[in-house]
Image 1 (cartoon, rainbow, N blue to C red):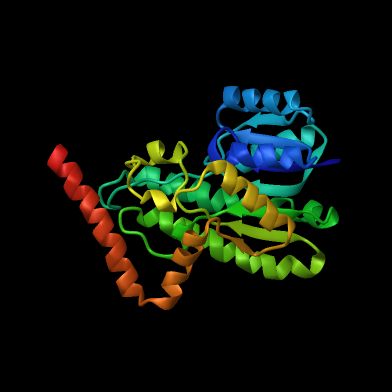
Image 2 (cartoon, rainbow, N blue to C red):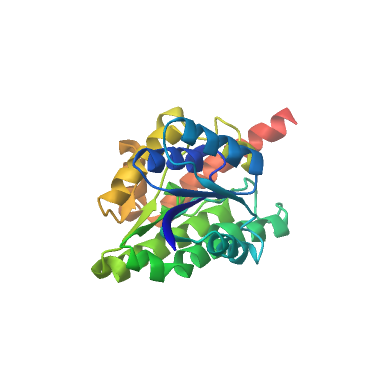
Length: 265
């Protein structure tokens, strides 16, 4: 079996940038996402840049059998992950009581269940190749999030799970890292139904920068990477301030957005 780096959610945004960064450092890649055309375009771009052309696998990991189908496709191609990059995920903006329940459950399936499945499924090969796991969480994982209750909860799970796995596998030489970006200008905003000015501009980072810092932190064995000094400070606030105060501040931002939307409706 040939060892590869598997990157999910690789068709756009942070996932595509992580693919470019890993490829530039000589990793053989497998790119997985739902959209075949975007994956093919990215694979061709990487090959044109002089790197090994990635294998692409179009699959929906939110489906119950999505991870198993991905595993079958890799096995059939004679490939096994030495590095797993779990980037696939999405968010939804709105009160939990108002958002579609099935879409919120699908968010849990993709952001948490599929990520856990893929983190554990190839542990034997990851350990054998002394590779690693890079899970994309979020600054949202450090705090509760009115207006994105389920999304924040899934990212809190990813952060906690990844930190624990980091400790369990450290002695085996396996690197496990949680990448926790703040706001990033990607398709995430549109899919979440989020105004592009929902977060202050000074908190935003480009997907290219997030990918570079994420890769560097992963390679150096960091447990958690939060790109950007201001976002790192933000991630510390829940440890320094009363949780009720943080909750109230986030709730005020969400209520301002709701009031503005109702005003313009």
